[in-house]
Length: 333
Image (cartoon, rainbow, N blue to C red):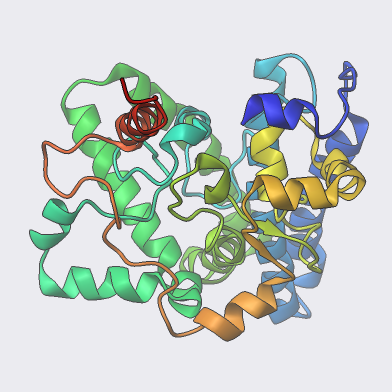
C-alpha cells in the first residue's frame, strides 16, 4: 500500500512542536478539571458527561501521542498524557500493541493483529456458550457501545497478568508506570472533586471508552487485499472527538500525519482514497447504526484465517495467494 499512498497526499516537514495538539491536551485536562471542581457541585450529571467527553478525547490524544506527536521527544510526549483519565490502558502497552497493529498485511489476524475482534475458529469453539454469546453481541454496534469496553479491558488485563506472572519485565514496568499515573487521578476524583470512585468508573470512564467504541466498531474488516481492510467514514460530528480518525484508511496510509492534516489529505484526493481502499466507505456513523445496531456486522470467527492451530496468519495467507496468482499467469510451456 505504501507506494500507492506515496502518490496520494504530499509530504510535509514535521514541526518541532505541533502546537494545535499541545493546546488540545491542555484543553482536555482543563475540561476534566473544570467539570470536577466547578460543575460537579451544582450540575453533577453535566459534570459527569463533560468528564466522559474528556476521557474519550484523551484516548484519541494518547493515540496521537504514540504516533510521535506533538514533539520529537518520545518521553516528553508520554509525559503530556501521563495521567490516564480513563484509568484502564497503560500507555506503553497500548503503544507497543497499537504500533504492531499498523502492519497492514496482518490486519484482522486473530493472533498477529492485537486489535482484531475476530476469533480463531478452534479457540472460539472451546469457549463456553455464554462467552460466545457475549462476543456475538459485542459485534453489534449497540453491544460494542455497552459491553465492548468491559470485554476489552477484562481480556486485556487477564492477558497481561498471565505474561507478568510468566516474568515479562517490560509489561510489569508499563503497569507500574500506569499505576503511578492512575493513583493521582483517583485521589483528585475522590478527595479533590468529591466524586465517588464507583460513580467515576461507571460514568466517565465507561462512557468515555464507549464513545471511542463508536469509532473502532467498523474500523477494520477482513478483505483479501490489505487495502480493503480499513474504513473511511466521510463525515461525522464526532470527528473532533476522534481527532479525524474516522478517516482511518488515511491514517493507516500516513500514520505520521498529524490529526489536523488528515481532512486535507483526504479532501485533496478523495476519489483516489476511496478507490485505494476498495470502497470500504460510509457516509457517517448513523448509517452504521441503522444497519448494525442490533445485528452483528462481522462474524466472531475469522472467515478465512486460523481455522486450526496449524493454519498460518494473514501474512502467510497473502504470500500464498500472491504465489498462486503468479503461477496462474505464467505461460504454459
